[in-house]
Image (cartoon, rainbow, N blue to C red; front, top):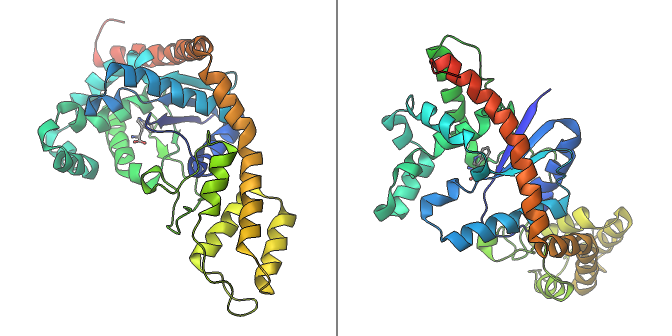
Length: 328
Ligand code: TRP
C-alpha cells in the first residue's frame, strides 16, 4: 500500500483556504492510505524562533488539524522533533548532498537574499532534512503544493543516489501527490486570487461568527450585473466559489439565478454566505477550543503518534545502517 506523508509547517493558523485546499483532502486520504502527518518544527529552526514560540505553535497547529478530522487512530500524527531517527538519516543523506546543488535551490537563494546575516547550514540543507522526513518512512506519495516541487526533486535525487551508491533498491522514489483535483482553491475576500494569510484577506477556522460576518460583509464586489446571463467578473465569481464550497446546491442555484436575471443583491448573498461559513466552521471552532484547552490530551496524542512513527523510523534506520556498514 502507498505510504503518504505530509509535513506541516508550524506557522500561523489554518484558514478556509487551507481547509478546502488541503486539510479536507488529508482527512479523506486517511481512509485510503497509510498516512503520516507531522509538524515540521525542526525546519522552523532556520529562523531561530524562541523556545516558547516553538512549544506553542506545534500545539496550536496540532489542535487545529485534529479539530479538522485528522485522526490518530487512522494515521500516524507526530511532531518531527519527537522522532530523532530522522536526524541520523539526515546526516547520512548530507554526506552525499553536494554544496553546488544545494546552493542552486531557489528557496535557498531567496532566503539567503532576504536574511543575509543568517545563511546557516540548516537553511542550506533544508532539502536533505525534508528528504530524510520522507525517506525515514519510505514514503511513496507526498502531497505538496507547487512551491515544494524543487524540494521533492531533491528528495528523489537523494533517494536515487543512496540506492545507486550502495547498489540497492531500498528507498522508493517519492512522488509528488497533487491535491489539485481533490481540493477547492478558495479565493481571497479582497478580490485577489487566493486566500492566504499574508494577504490579510482570509477567514481563520477559529474566527467567531461576528468576525466572519464582518469579514464577509466587507468582501469586494462590483456595481452589479450589466446584462442578463453575463459572465461573472472575478470578484463576484470569488463569492460564488465560496458559496459552492460552503452552501447547499439550492442556495448556490438561487443566487446564480438572481445573478442571471439581474435581481441579485450582494448584501443578501453575503449574509447567506457568512451564515453558511459560520455553520461549517462552528463545530471545528468548538473542537479547536476543546483541544487547545487540554494540553495534556494534546501532549498524549503527540507522544503516542511519535511512538508509532519511531517504530517505522527505527526499522528504516536499522536497514540503512546495515547497508552503509554500521553495526545494527
Ligand atoms: N517544506 C514543507 C513546506 O514548507 C514542509 C515539509 C517539511 C514537508 N518536511 C516535509 C512537506 C516532508 C512534505 C514532506 O511546506
